[in-house]
Length: 357
Ligand code: NAD
Image 1 (spheres, rainbow, N blue to C red):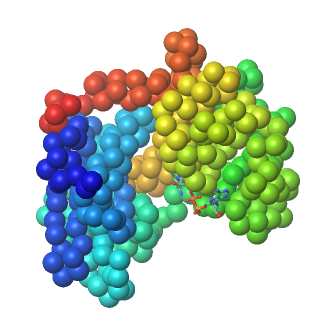
Image 2: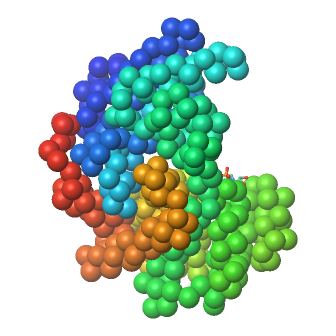
Image 3: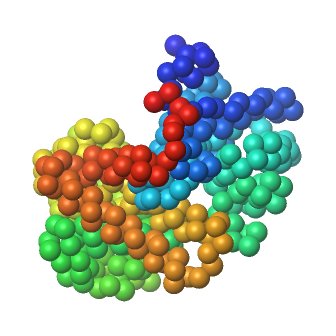
């Protein structure tokens, strides 16, 4: 049964949702502001068609909350927000371009309460346009779309080192083996960093040519996507799709550490405990994959020095190390330590909450 708009808003623990109907296209725009105690909200804009507009609203709310934890988890003073533009199935290119312009004008009317970047269904070119019209796009470097992938990969690399140090007492990657699943915008540069540090690489991608391209560049062994659970490795780095950690796959894992960029790696929170019971160290996805967000937040605030940007991204490793230690002494999953750390940062740095939490 489709839930009503009011029921959905009533059940939410966030602050507010700015809702606009675009009569020219029939699209709905939902800008969900989950928690703005740390600062103006920032998060991606997703453009997709949904079974019903209310499903787009639910998606916006869920993703906005994720952004609250992401920013607080890495100690960045942005609020949690996300926008969804729920479009009709048959939206043509011209109509889409007009919609993007009106969405940018909508952000102008919010006067910086929400700043945005790319998400599913939107492109770096959309963001350049939105930035030019509104000034509220994140991820632009001097007006041009930037590529977050290499920064995200750097953050994952720092996270892998932190996990190795915690699990094996030694951060060095050289003597270790890593399975990189997904050799796209993040996985490819991650494989490069790992190869440079001397790791034994196992590479897998649904598109075998992508894995082979990485192998030609960095060496390593290509594993067919169906065979990944048969490989013994120190680190499994999921850098493709979500939900690869679930009750079916966790018993089959043959690794000591899971540390990769994919969003929503756990099918459910209970899988964090399943990993812990198997003695596998899990680096919470929304922390280890924050490198792009960290770098773009700094660039947005005027930072251009590449050495300082990299140093900020590398901090993800230190944050994870602390989370691993806290989790170990509390005998719990790092997922819970990450949430507590984010909550502490929010409480210490945020003002009074405007939401109903
Ligand atoms: P991408 O689309 O550039 O690359 C993904 C790669 O994974 C592709 O080569 C694809 O063929 C492969 N793939 C898809 N399904 C697969 C499967 N089941 N098994 C093996 N390979 C598969 O994406 P990306 O930008 O590199 O992002 C990868 C993941 O990291 C995504 O979950 C994304 O949400 C997350 N993430 C990315 C960034 C970033 O900066 N790009 C930041 C945070 C999180």
